[in-house]
Length: 167
Image 1 (tube, helix red, strand yellow):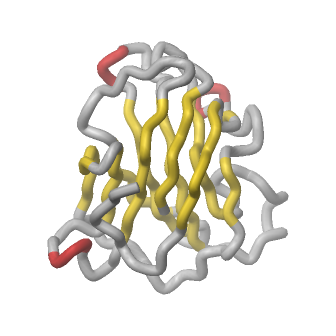
Image 2 (cartoon, helix red, strand yellow):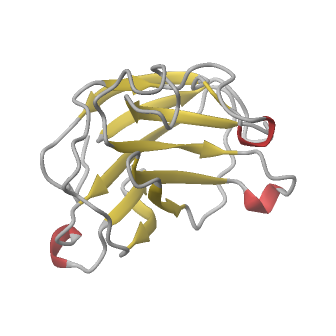
């Protein structure tokens, strides 16, 4: 999954926001048991921690059935302001990305900012419908996700883990 994103908020914001989410209970797009999704996939930004150094981009793959998830988080601290534009990509491959041991990656402007090699149950069905953002105000008080505050453009989804971005 790759896309350009124009921020309509600042990195000083204390909140969580999803860039994308496949329909599942994780972000409560549907009432429980109304979706056939057994796996979920989402990526976003977390600004909730009360330390500026704890803010991060994240990518999660999980199972609604077993209630397990693998999450990777960005290693860098990015400062952004309203109007800033970034290219993001989220890649995953159970066999390793580009011949590496890494199973998941987050790219920002063509550079890997997070990666992980943990295994997950890849046999579960991922819903073919993708949401941009999340249901506004979803989650418990300390785990609140909100709709993305920005513009997503030139979204592309590939059936392989792309490792090079040139547009």
